[in-house]
Image (cartoon, rainbow, N blue to C red; front, side):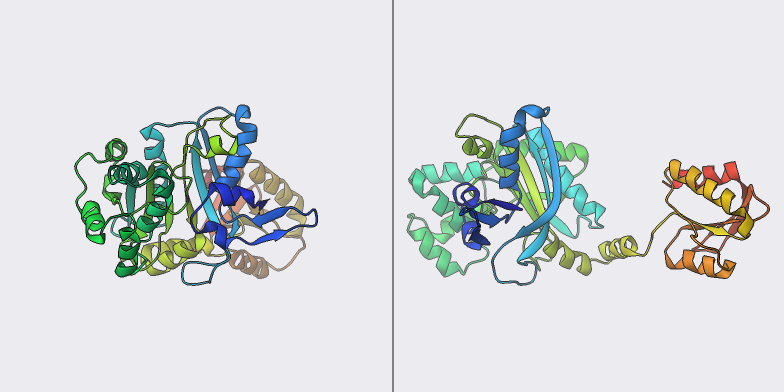
Length: 376
């Protein structure tokens, strides 16, 4: 979680350097708590790239930190879900990454009516800047203006665009009416998403640029369709990051995206289906089956059954001391067990009780194992 500050000052750009938790450590090194994961990944891969087959597929869930004003959907400490594909430059990698982002949202309970993936292409804007005579060294500043069009007052962005010899009307018209085929990469990715049945989730939106300077090509952001929150997730191509970190000695194309917990938490709360899935996932559940000892003399049989089930991948809770049957069943209910298996003097005949319905059946040992294992 602690990185050299230089990693972010040179490689990220935008507003990120001003949001660093930055300090000098006891070794007089200039360091910062990581504000995002991609730069750290680039540093790691640049030192270990020979150790893995390509493309390299990576994901991580971990804490990040940004020094900024806490507000709805944004906190100073947050958990980020990061996914990347490195070592593959084809549109297939972009489509695979977008499909994973969409499927992640679907797995959380969201539908096409709840969110949209707005996809853009930085190459389109680089060509636009060149055609309108914007000097190469000023392009990052131009892209920063485009990136903030939706968040800044129209008169503020108009004043900034005037410095490049452009009007807000010109930019708005270009975004609203992009020429057909303006982004061949987007067209390729859309074709792949159509084949996957996921095209309804995406739309071309050139207003998306992404604020970090290391993005080089296709970029995207996920928004709720009610537009009540900032971007839920975002990412894109960063083909030159590894090369920059290694002074050109390693050239590895890459694409990735990140999702923070703060925004998605608000969106889950606003969506009944997603909220229901969350509540079910958070419901108390410590094991698949609680073993209940109906007769103290059968403890050895109970322990043997526990080991047999655990070896088969079933999560099992066992009573550590003898107590009354009703107390053991109450414990099984409190800990969220799916089943209670009652072992008495009839063993190897076992009473299996489904805790949610209180339905009970008597099964032989082999039948019990077959009943429980398919639920894994």
